[in-house]
Image (cartoon, rainbow, N blue to C red; front, top):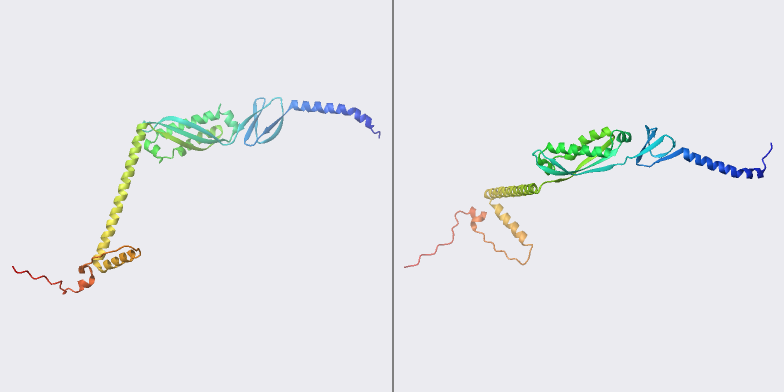
Length: 273
């Protein structure tokens, strides 16, 4: 075999470099690199027609006839602030709502509606008006009605049609007119005071029942009174610097009750006139 002299290789080296450079330039002009980052999805189109959804990674396509559109598929929040709504009693109030959602079907989110965020905003607005109008004002203000959960069930079903998954709908604030706020504050204060009086009355009734039971036990067993007195003296004896004077008549002791014949002190003789 005839070997190519090294001098001939050196002579063709610049030509090889030029050919490689031209090939690389042609490749960059004809082929396009698409990199999809984490948390996003990219829609691929050929001649304007949807082909498929690209997951995170690197892709190569011919530049001619191929286009892409990126969609954020991370969880997002949508706030619907200060909506004027009417309750069941036709009382106006302002309600602020926040919704958390995720794009789960990017092709539906871009192809079914013009703007999926605007569509979700309108869906939350309508659901809020319908739910508030179905319930009385007291339930809305007191929090006994889980308004957010009811709205989520309604909104999630409609948002699923254009590729969204609604994780939660939460009521941020319920604002009442000034006169209604004062009325609810006074009603709440009166309710708390009535509850406090009821608890106090219950405590007094329980205390009276205990006293009545104690009196009945002392009447049946008079010796309990002496035991109670001894307990009181024992507790008082632990502290120093105090003097206790107890006056106990013979009628309080059980020994005196056992001697009915015992006479009291002699009566003084009447003085002569």
